[in-house]
Image (cartoon, rainbow over all chains, first blue to last red; front, top):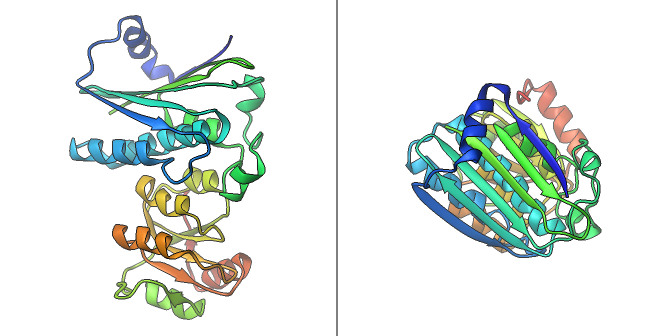
Length: 162
Length: 115
């Protein structure tokens, strides 16, 4: 398996502490992300943002969460055979985990390069395929972890602190 | 600049009845790529685009889009207009190209959104 980690330096200790012993979440949300279903894709990000807004998360953090979650949700719909988006919400952070059913990212380094895309024609017609999905998720997250390889499922998980 | 002034400058057609055209629009962004729009929009922004699918309306759930100008004569389907109406998102169509719209608004003093 190939692995990618990005952690904002100021959150390094908090992120490592979190993953070493994940606490019990205050709230959990789960959304299916069906393959190539661009009618529902984005529902998860949208509903998660609305919930966090009601919980009083500030607007800049909300935007970062929504953009990162939306890009990841679209990635699952556009590039995989479908998957699940799971949100774990705590007092001070959100952990969003996307687990798909493959076919995996063959070249992780390439996938992280802004502008590189493997999107097909249908996906491009929708306005996706700019090759900015993963870079945009990385830019808006405090921690990003990707686990994948060719012909295997992909896990993308991100943490954003409030 | 108000939305009303923008509609006049771009010879636009307002798609949703009773849209408040007096709202102030501080800045704009133009693109046909959804990730570009998400990456570049961090403040309330007017969006100019040739995309007319449901995901372009969905964007307004994630970021602060003041209104959408559909360029090159593109017309969204009724269900897309309904999605925008539910969100209170003004939609405007113009026959002008993205380049021309951007030039006209820029010359009229509309700034680019902060990226």
